[in-house]
Amino acid sequence: MTILHIDSSINGDNSASRAISRSILEQLRAQSQGSSVLSRDLVADPLPHLTLASFNDQEVLEEFLGADTVVIGAPMYNFTLPTQLKAWLDRILITGKTFRYTANGPEGLATGKRVIIALARGGIYDAGSPAAALEHLESYLRGVFNFIGIEPEFVAADGLNISSEQREASIRSALGETVRLAA
Ligand SMILES: Cc1cc2nc3c(=O)[nH]c(=O)nc-3n(C[C@H](O)[C@H](O)[C@H](O)COP(=O)(O)O)c2cc1C
Image (cartoon, rainbow, N blue to C red):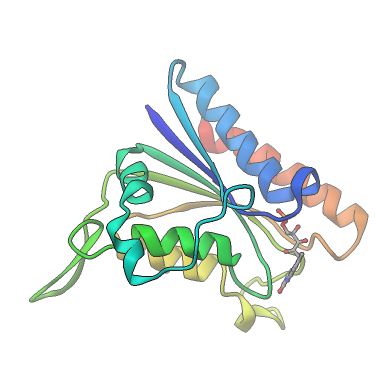
């Protein structure tokens, strides 16, 4: 199994999404010995903003297409994903490669991959909560991956900025969830 591991938090060792994505990776590796892992830290090694010239560089796309499983650490910044992660998505949403338009509408071509996303959010965005309309992280990522033919799985740590107790409990629960996810 080839695993692609993507991180996009600017918070280094204090990052919740990095801790959760690392735990997902560890669980997957324990379950499938001998799998190869390719890591891309989008903060240590950022991709430039999309330009027309970027379409000639297919390295990021090839990495994605070559992976069986993709693990992504995705923190919420300003109600959506980090720009570093958007720059990565800009390189994998390529017509004719990961989707195409047909007479019956768009068709995802990246089927058969497992995508697991570690979300970390400072607030609470559950349906019906006051801030629900501002949730543009999970909803966006689900929409994007659905578009290319993948149903992503999510492990979320929420309410991280409400209190230190809430943060600790939320991260602990998400880390527990990663065990179930890899089982
Ligand atoms: C620049 C910045 C912007 C943020 N914006 C939001 C936000 O819009 N909504 C929210 O719920 N939390 C927000 N937060 C809180 C983060 O989602 C929270 O700290 C989370 O732990 C980030 O994940 P990380 O620890 O992996 O970086 C923001 C944090 C930072 C640093």
